[in-house]
Figure (tube, rainbow, N blue to C red):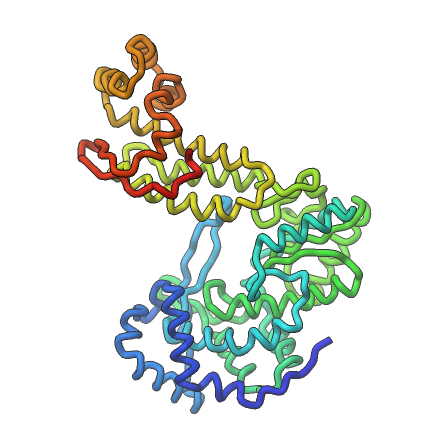
Length: 434
């Protein structure tokens, strides 16, 4: 149940240039594009003392008025649809970051242990491992509830009322309300915000957890085991029948009580090996990369290794390395290393295909393979077979010329790329492609 937290100096802390200055360093660290005013982080920092002093004054005398956020559209990771993000101005990001750091300790102490998203010391890996433990305890059926446009549908009055159950400083509640209603600029036109909390602002994750904490409390009251990361919530039960019943009753609670909308088309009841959670799925009690995540990775590799690119091969390698290091670290949770090897093999084949293409004609390719130690007959059979560059990238002659070890020993070599000489980027850490 809610517990009022006496924070008489909460608003005074917000208005402190000391707090605002410290929080600007966090905004700077997170980088980000300018808002609708065009002021970059560098511009703001150039007159930092003046900007912070003005913010303090505006907050203190209640003349502070947040600017509408700049809306941007980014494709979703699965390639299906777009995600709407809002980019606040730098000065508004400083205010939101300060609010976040002041409010987070107050609310986080009361959040459910089954909530993992946007919380200090909690991660996606922890959520997936918790889901695995619940499934292995004898609850293999998953109620996978998808919330339709969650951030866009957050009910302002319910959110402020919920916050008011925990904090007494009405000035903070008033400021949050002002930020929520700051509006969105689309193609130069400002649209007022009657509901929702635009993704992209520093404060939005905390507000989303405050909204969905009410769902967490309801699920715990019903004795249900679940894992939630932001608006991605999976509930685990023992049977199909129980799962269907939970889906119906919880969906009613979400729509009638929380004033949110359940996407019935994307929500599902299924066994764990048929459900994707944060890019993973639990198969026979073990964690595996979801099929959709693997397919998305294959598409990303193709995007990074396009045909007819003007980029040097060294530049392409650097971009692949930067992406793959982060991707493989995240998906290292899989129990099946062969899933990672599948992506690595695809990367190597795409690179071999480009090496074949760089030779332009058959005779130079034939000579290149010979130079790389391929027997003449084997090289001739491959090159003069009328196979496409993609087919050639998998034949024995090409894989022999450019074996897996070649991708490890590139450091210090020079290669011809787009008829230019380019030093290979340092791939000494690219051990996954061995």
